[in-house]
Figure 1 (cartoon, rainbow, N blue to C red):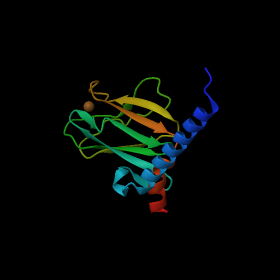
Figure 2 (figure 1 turned 180 degrees about the horizontal axis):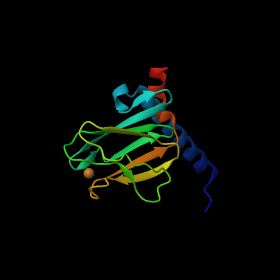
Figure 3 (figure 1 turned 90 degrees about the vertical axis):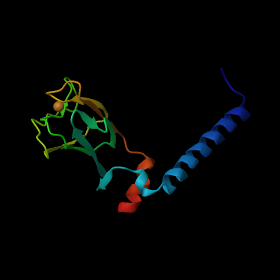
Length: 141
Ligand SMILES: [Cu+2]
């Protein structure tokens, strides 16, 4: 169905205002709103391995970023990509204080688990960077 021209203009104006509003909001957001740290143009997101969970269970990073898992539990755990994952990794057995870092060069949502405890699951969402990250980039360069 087609809309009258004035309605299309109004919709376009609203969309523009919303986009500008979102940009202003992101530009004025406090630096603490971005929880990940910036290294060059990419981020490193941190995930804590506890007994028996990944915390946070889901992280979201721009493509080219890394995720660093640090073992803060007592029992042995792994971070292992689910079978068939486009981004494949396996930390091997991590003990207390151990860590593993993986860089993600493909976009998508990548599910993973602990090799010893199938109930321990997590997700890494990798996306194309947007203006949302402009404040952090401006602040750090
Ligand atoms: Cu485990």
